[in-house]
Image (cartoon, rainbow, N blue to C red; front, side):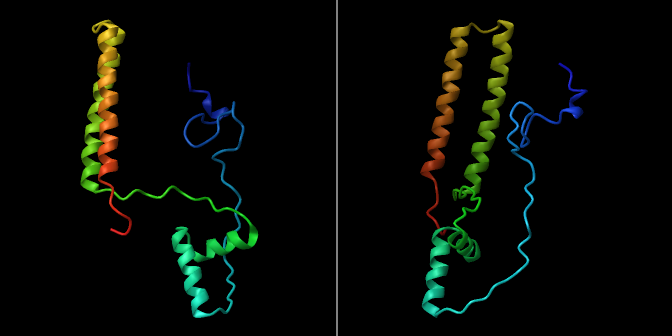
Amino acid sequence: MSYAGASDTGPCEGWQASPSNPTGAGQARAKEPLSETFVFRCTAQEKATLRGKAKSASLPASELLREALWGTRSRRRKPVVPVDPLLVRGIGKIGGNMNQIAARLNSSERRGFIPRINAMKLYACLVSIERLLAALVDAHRRPPGC
């Protein structure tokens, strides 16, 4: 299949919706800029409580108030898991090597160089290594605030 004429239908990969899935996913939402401010008076205790609730929700205080007032939910991202960067880098290198092994395995299997049963055993080994690496990352998570 040629992708030379793909410009008339738009891209079908990545963050944009495909023509067969016209949900509008990936299209920029028209969003009014937050250019105005509103100030209100409160006690020091109320301010501390508001800041505490915002911190526990991992949101800015303004976003927490917006959600409370308008009943909307902000688009929240998953929190980043704190892990030692050296561990992440090392596991990334191992993962890259595993991808190279899997690619060679796929190529060899297609060409008939490796019997299918042996290829399945090698795939099982790669999956078990991947699971061990995920367990290693979980075991080395830093407690919040470190």
